[in-house]
Length: 146
Image 1 (cartoon, rainbow, N blue to C red):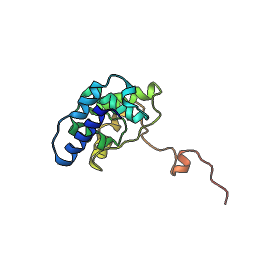
Image 2: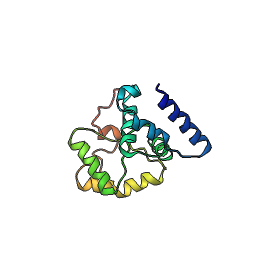
Image 3: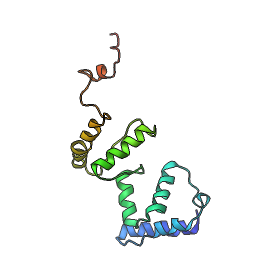
Image 4: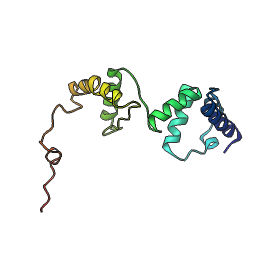
């Protein structure tokens, strides 16, 4: 691990434990020009480093994002922007579905259901009713023999 990244990690841990926010992780990653400097081994590491390079978050903002997303891609916006984002990913075969991980349950899930789902339904991207009365019928699964 490079000494710059070690310093950033140490400062980040201190900031997390003691409450100061120096933004050193973001600063350290910006000075590393190549991915070889970082020795990235996972896609989630690449996502985190890409976010830091684009947004230049403070340590507090970075930890808040990572804590809420648990290392997954994060998108936030108005209900229309979220629906647009999801539609684009579906139409361009970037995704065949989404896992929602709201940072506050059940409140943020309720907001998503009330504000984003109706937009997706109007666009024909989210069902308005189930096709069967049971999950097995909905997925057109045969009933196992007993």
